[in-house]
Image (cartoon, rainbow, N blue to C red):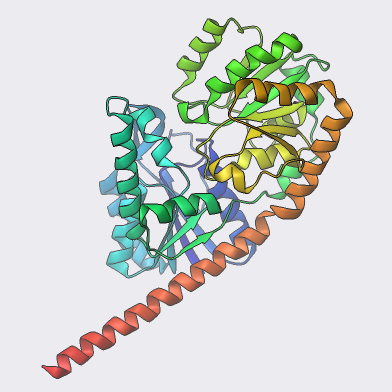
Length: 403
């Protein structure tokens, strides 16, 4: 198949959507398919790759990390897309990419699939704080329902997220296809070298959060949990990687809680090696987000044999199994801190949990298997649209004959 991805975000912007796109593109190409991506340009120094078409973009005032692609430039790609003869369009984000993807699909009669990567009901109010939360939630549901019902197929990263979409009233055919882990996630890396390069003593207990530094990630919960944890483990260090719109707010909270010397924010890390080494360097990966459609970083941590303590809600509920790499905690600061404390105090148990997680990630979440699943969904969507088109052509032909 000849597949067109369209997204409002991609590397060098590091997040779960970028990772998912890159993983699926790599695995689909390995299966013999062609994949092209339309994504925003970020700087003149963007890495140039043959399979990526970069579109001029501008910063978004409430989220300067992300970009809004020039819609006129996007629509101007229509003749090029017509000449490429794509079999399917796969939209990955609900902004300019969604609307231009729908436009291309209608103009060229190409089936359109969209992945619902982000739980916007639990996201939108952070970026539109002037709107009451109950209104922003209703608005997010309405927009999600309309967008999902406008495409030919929906990919949901988890069953719980698909259940939510069905509650919204989405009628579009859908498939649950999580993002898998490629071989690089399991690479043998040097966690000790990472610690030394960041001046973290080899014997210091290290907790790790990886992800977008954003309000919906519930990082404030982890900071308050850390205040409780250091009462028992005063040397424990919480490392936060990533960047995002909540950075200044998080820094303010760290200062207010008086834990500036117990928390380290180290920004983005290169995914090809440094981030994987960071997972390896940590004693425990901690995660408290309640709005994940999947939670890929949890699996990435497990792939390096790092024990996890996390809240299991929405998408993370579908991948987390107690004892299989993780201790699942309630949405309670003291309970969460106690789970972390248990693992810090019991190295053999921590190692056993971590090793089980590595086995679980390797056996259940390989990227190749999931790429085959999404390719199968493309084919069924293409066939369904083709059948519908033939049916409509027949109806129109019969109507003309009857007149």
